[in-house]
Length: 368
Ligand SMILES: *Cc1c(COP(=O)(O)O)cnc(C)c1O
View 1 (tube, protein in one colour):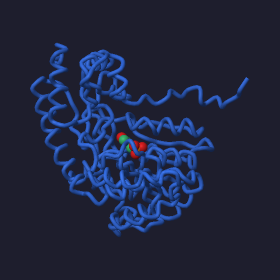
View 2 (cartoon, protein in one colour):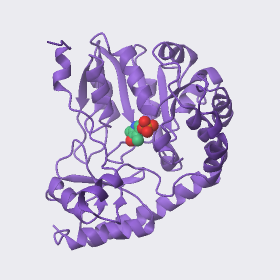
View 3 (tube, helix red, strand yellow):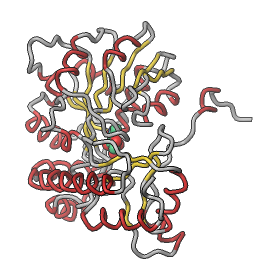
View 4 (cartoon, rainbow, N blue to C red):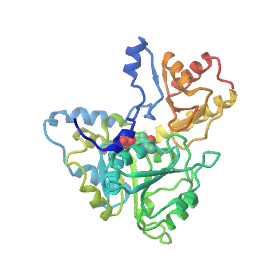
């Protein structure tokens, strides 16, 4: 008999959004709209595609384990030192590195109820513990409540700001206050996967805590996670990064695999950074899409949560049933993890959003 740790018994594998090809295969559908994984519906920058085409001759070589050029571009773009950056195979990999370093000896992670599911998964896999801090009844997050829950065993606090799937985000002032009161033996992970969509709406730029922009906020143990998977449209290439003071990066580097980010992803990310017009276009279109969703949900009296991301959580009578019926109509959404009878829909291109509402209407019970 093979032996493995007992704590792995409780782990349910992550259920990703259904891939388009799979649904086409299963149901013989030609036209499928995927609004399930918060991907950029406009693809990625054309410069990225051209750069990848130019670079395929080198894929027999290992990538640069230190990601020299990407590190240089990003450190200039973000105004941080190159040594304050760590790259991951998606920011998910950095979440995993954090858990392996800081939770493996049975220490505890804290996060809000209904946070990004990966926090729970990596905590369990690393052999750590976790506790969830309840949400307020309007699904908002009270950061003072998080402070009260910190115990001697707490090693890491994960906060996705904005939160996936609720779309909620804490604002600058309350976040500054929270950071001021944060104890020094805790690592705060601010997961800003949707930063490009949320900035400009009063949400903090977590990297400012590391740049020490506000001298009245003391230096704390913080890592900010960002990704090229969402607004930059590179989800399939798997590349994300973390920003922290050098001491924290050096600790995490101990568990990073030498060639964790691939050659094409590094090239793509350098080009993607240069094309901020594409990012701005994507964000503007997302704002328009958001308005369309709000209006259409309101017309149908469907309860939804206003969002700071590129996705919206909304209430239905039976989430599993409606999820499956929408699949049959060729529309892939996602049950919202941790929230019974809520679905999460990504904001797509206008015609995709319209197709979503047509499919929903054709089910006949959109109005509760
Ligand atoms: C999508 C997402 C990520 C990013 O994952 P990648 O591994 O970079 O693709 C991280 N955190 C949250 C909350 C997300 O929704």
